Structure formats: C-alpha cells, structure tokens
Image 1 (cartoon, one colour):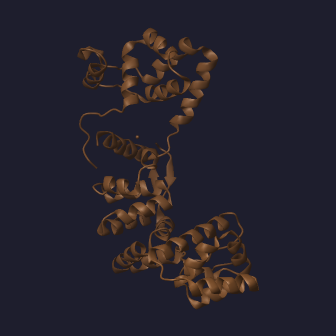
Image 2 (cartoon, one colour):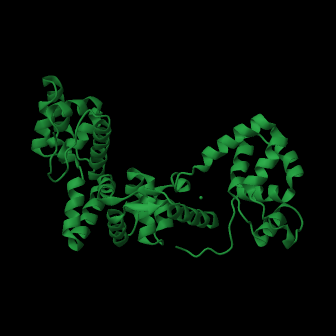
Image 3 (cartoon, rainbow, N blue to C red):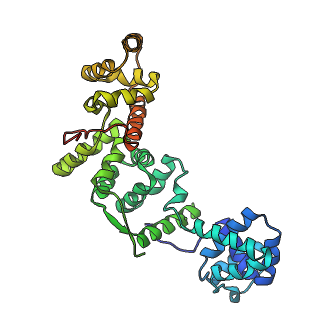
Length: 338
C-alpha cells in the first residue's frame, strides 16, 4: 500500500476543520445558515475528526482566509465540539434528530467510496496494491462487482487475488477500517475487536461464477497448476449454465416463468442437446415449438452475447434459490438435493 504523506482532505472535511477553528459561538451562527442536509453532512465529518495537526489546519485556513499561525491546530475532538454547538443552532429536539442520523451514517459500509466507481477505474486503482488488500476489497464489494474488477486486473494478479480469497476467513474489523481509510486517502489524493466472516472457497467460487468464461477458465487453470485440490474445491462450488440440467423439472418450470424469452433463445445457442431437451420438456407444446423455431432462424451471435444471456438466466436462478423456490446443484458433483 502506498505510504501516506501529508494528509489529504476532501471538501467537506476542510469545511469541518474551518468550523472547529471558528469556535463554538461563530460555528453556531454559521450552522443556522445551512440546510438540514448540509448540517448533517458537515456534522458527520466533524464527528470523525480527531487531532488535526497544525500544518493541515494552517493549509486549510489559508485556503479559507488570509493567514493563521501554527497555534490554530485543532485538538478538541470534533464529535464533542459538534454536540456543544448544534443545540444552540437548531434547538435541543432538532439537534437530537441530527445526532441520531449522524450515528447511523457513522456505521460505515466498508469501501463505500469504491462501490459507485467504474470497475475499470477500481481495477486500475487497486492493481498496485498488495493481493491481500485487493482480496479484502473485492469480498466487500459483492460478487458481481468483484467479478468485473477481477476481469480487468493483470492475469497473474487475478490468480493471486483469488488464491488469497480462498484462504481468507476472518479479518478484524479494525484492519478492514484501516485499509478502507488508507485507500480513501489515496483516492482523495488522485473513505476492532469484532471479526467478520469473509472470503473462503465459497466466496471465490461465487466471484468466478460471475466472471466471463475466459477469465474464470484462466483463473481455474492457474489454480489447478498450483493447487489441484483447491481448484477442485472451487470448481465443485461453482454453478454454470450447463448445470441447469441437474435441476428437477419443477424447478426448471419455475425458472422458465421468470426468464425473458429473448435471453433464453440466445443462451441456448451453445447449450448441449441434453440441456435443450430439458428446457423443451418443461415448456408447453406450443411454447417448445416456438422456441425451436426461434433457435432455427437465429443467426450468428457473438460469444460474449451468449454468455451475457446465460449469466442473466443464472442470476434469476440464484435469486429463486434464495427465495427457496428452486435448489441449485454444484457444478462438479456432490449432493444436489435432499
């Protein structure tokens, strides 16, 4: 991870520093001129400030006004300051509501600032980080986002990251927070004791499930060359489009109710005869006939489009499984149903 030098602050953080430097009476007057959402945002930043050094304070105040000395360093906790100021600005009841809202906001979602960025941007941002750091970030961003990011990482790094995820089980909350804050500071310059269950072979399989075929095949091949047993564990937990053939007929019918017919036609372009037969079997005679006709007249389709359609159907299947309507079998054997 890049070494942190001078502390970089965002706009709201700078505003919070200025408010703390102004003192309680002046800050209260300023807050009266702000809207509720502005007060909430500013209050959240003030609550998170601790021991801002003199150099940072001076730099911020120089931007805001003419010149302040080193003695303007802030050592009063921002949370304590804000709690003193706000009641005089808004009144006790309204201030209490703002405090409650801020407390909810402070229950920070790890790596929140990365979630809305383009996967290419995130991959480019993370590629210089240690594989363990990248693995920690990916397991917090959700399988779909993680899969996209993984696809944009260098090939050798893809393997390293997935390997780290398979062996990751518990990470102290404080470590997650420290990594998050460090990455947030890096973003600005170009956001405990309890432990969380993260990563593991299951998580790695879920991420690879959502990768494009080329990426998942390449990573699995690299895993097999290094650790055959681990690769087998990951593969057994993966569920690919062809595995739909293992779903009982009742589950297939439930799935077909939710699937867009256009996606189904394209997805079946590369499907095995066995899977096609399974689908036709669970459609009405008329619907099966129409599907066969659509497949017969379907022209050349890009492989990426076929895989995209298959992924859409798999996403529906996973949702139905979460809802308890169907049961998905593992991709490489194991007990599928009870």
